[in-house]
Image 1 (tube, rainbow, N blue to C red):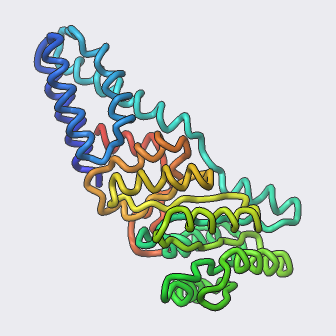
Image 2: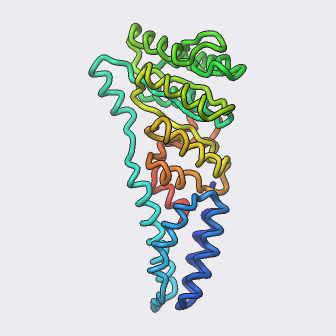
Image 3: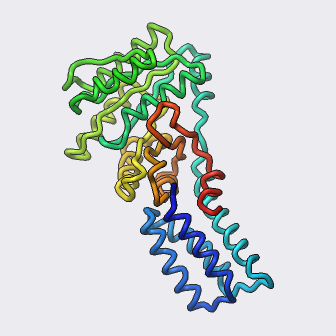
Length: 301
């Protein structure tokens, strides 16, 4: 995972360990480093922050043992990246659900994202995660536009003995979500997960549909699903959904196949929302809670 980004950081620390650097050398090193970060799907705003943090430290740096220089740069990188994730905060899903249970209300989670990101599969993985934590779950098949979406969700749900609330294709997704809430209340279900459409004929139509679902069911949690392999497209999608829906956190799919690694860092920075989980495989258990320290350790070694 994330080989390209790891190589960028490793190469930088090696170069700066070799000698005292002039201002021109620092500028040249940082320019090449910026290009590598951009090629690794790190957003321009993130690249500028990291390089600004590094420049003042690299200017004229001279330590008796060269390995100390590399270590200092590595620690500066670590601090800079962790600052980005620290600003997003975290989401304690089990804690939030327990608080809702005390009020006797189902906890409603709306999943957002475009088609092809693995959204419906992630709904199933998340339902599995919740069941493993002792919560009862139902799902509402709110993607009423994509052919096969309801059947796909139903197959996943049947394997986990989870109730699916669905209507016909072409039905109003907000009405499906409302039916799901009514079912959850009537049957004392802890959590209702609402799948949603991800078609992109026009951003405006999709965002209006998402807005209607939010108004009708007032979800407790809105989660954006992004494909880490989509690179800058995933980042722009996250910005769009953040602008129109104000989602609370993100899950990145297919990270086990992501050789670049910039999506998590960039989405956290440009949206100010936490990365909650990473999809790391095809099985239901392959949803890994995101840990910023572990992520940085993987990048920096």
